[in-house]
Length: 324
Image (cartoon, rainbow, N blue to C red; front, top):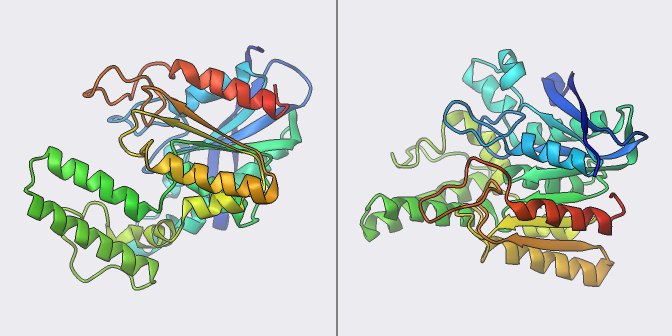
């Protein structure tokens, strides 16, 4: 395995002219290296995978350094309006709603992938995407829609079901942990289903939103949710033309190993049978949503090193694809 060589700070233009900034990590192997665009999960997440000061995982930073050890370059970016480009975040709510629309994030990924492919030291014929959580869905949307042609996708802790089904599990788990009576759980789940159904249908938010859901659906996120809620990850995976690795943790309480992983795997099995496209599913025993080891039921698996099986799973995949 090669050693980490250099990290360069880059700036470029994203969707609709938004400024973007990120870190290009180049391995010391020399020549033109294969490369991956790293796309973070939901929320105001920076290029390293953090939402400081409350959530610090360094997931994308850790992955970038691990990839360099395999001789693979990477580009990790601050989300639009975050980190080094925070000054570009609009203040007026109508402008902000457009700025953080789902299509803008997909467009940013498209332009970032092109930026990575054009870097000296990168083999533009071997440039793919590693998306974490929401980032995996953005990668699927980009590839299945033909907006870009990544050489591979790595879906890390990415849901296999539409977000409506995922949120039902997450909201129910949180409400029950907080001691809500079952009648209240049923009511809030029904309300959440109604909101998402309206968004998918293009009807916008209802006039009133349950107080327990208000923080999830602020007015400025309407366009974001309209795009997110209308995507079916398994359907998109089945339409992607490139090799796909699914990398998930058995202890992930946000994207479920027994529901989301089988949904993606079933789509990829059908795709392989119909189109001969390669895939692999790696389920990491005891790994969290952030691919960190979990010591027990009360450990969220946010900090510390990557789960030990991340390296071996990625190594096998890269060798299979001729990237290492």
